[in-house]
Amino acid sequence: MIKDKITPEIKDKLREAINLTIETGREHAFIMCRDDKEDLFPRAICEGRECIVTMEPPESCLPFRAQGNFHTHADTAVARRIFKDVEGRLPRKIMTDYVKEVADSEGVEVTTPSHGDLINALVNKCLRRTEGTVCVGSDTVPDRVDCYTANNKIIKDDCDRAAMLKLLTRIEESGLPRPWIKPLFDKEIINL
Image (cartoon, rainbow, N blue to C red):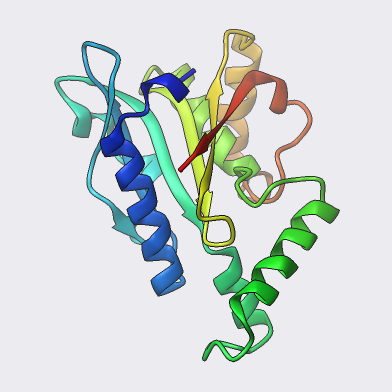
């Protein structure tokens, strides 16, 4: 669990990444590292598709360990593109309310990681590359981040399944977290 380890520096970086997503309509991300005192500190923010955070080597945290990653979802920006409102004629509140309603109808929060996010976190935990944390913020709810950390219920079969799915298919990575993976993570809400 990491909620008590979130430093003011991490909170500032979370806010910065979310604000950049609001401004640009693109996802932003960074690796979270853990020092010898178990405190977290952030690496640099990266943007968009060129920012494959889950693949960044944990060596970027050396001599310390990688806790996991944070990334944003650009849900409101995507909704604007769907409605062909890239100029922002519709009030932001209308767009954010729409995105929240869609998420509610699917039984998730806009800050819920995708199934692929959880698979990557689980594989990285199983390989001891990270501590298995993925945190997600959104341009829709800029004052909240949800962090999911792999827990001690993980068995070798879970690691094998996640690794196989990661290697064999991209379909399994998209969409909502599947029922089998949810119990392997503990969720914490970080209010900004």
